[in-house]
Image 1 (cartoon, rainbow, N blue to C red):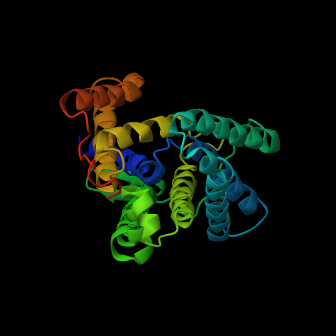
Image 2: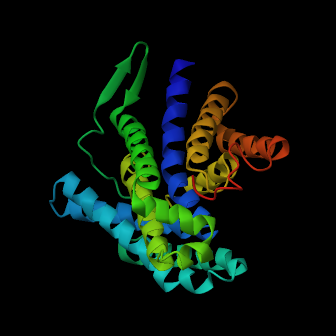
Length: 286
């Protein structure tokens, strides 16, 4: 039981990392940013490439994060910006971007899986009768740090308050002198960095491949819906809830249906609380 709970916390932390970026972008632009998975893939491949060239892991990880942030911003500048007044086109554009990024990775690196070596993948944390690998510990700590930093940025800085103002009412924020374009860029930059971080810390557990983030993206969207569209706190609660549901279901019923447990959880939430665990109808990002 304790081991299943720890595995659930790991899965929940991983889902939360990806969901934070998705819910931030959706809260600001109402776009289902499927391209986030492609950004994650290229961040992981960049990290692997730089490390393979002989650079220390931290430098390689920094390169991966930089690529993730830049690519995420480019998706907004080159694609999403032009359809922000036509949200019906957003899913098609997002899927198109995802395919472009994934196939770019496939052309450059091929389809064979790559193994990312980290200084901590041989660590083991022993907690009584249960164990947790170093990779899982780093994922949990990274998610906790990301949540704390994002909450501080959104609630305690002028940039964060501007993002929330644009999410709440774009026209009113613009009239008050807030640069809407700048806040979109900042939101996508933060989302890219969060996605890149998720890809880098979980890559040692799952081999790097062009389609490594697809299932994780689906789980993260479940988290976004369950937590409440645009809710940062909801993404954390939803991520942890989904991780525990999948882990406990896999442990006590069957690992073959792990993803199915997550979608059953989604259906249950939509039936009993259609707006999600934490509705933000009055506050689009928070």
